[in-house]
Image (cartoon, rainbow, N blue to C red; front, top):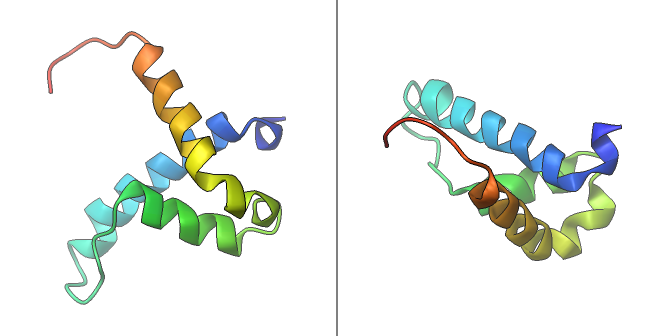
Length: 77
């Protein structure tokens, strides 16, 4: 069900991106710290059920960012 909603998929990709930065890039200096778009592109290219959407990644990221900004959160940055 979540695979059908690409915005939800992007939330999972975001978690994986933070995990990659926090636990891999910190421990392995030769890894490139990439932004969410670069990371999502790699995920979309390597996951069979996401490959068909690689060409729409900019639109998907834009929809995800829009949704993310519309969700109220608490706390400080």
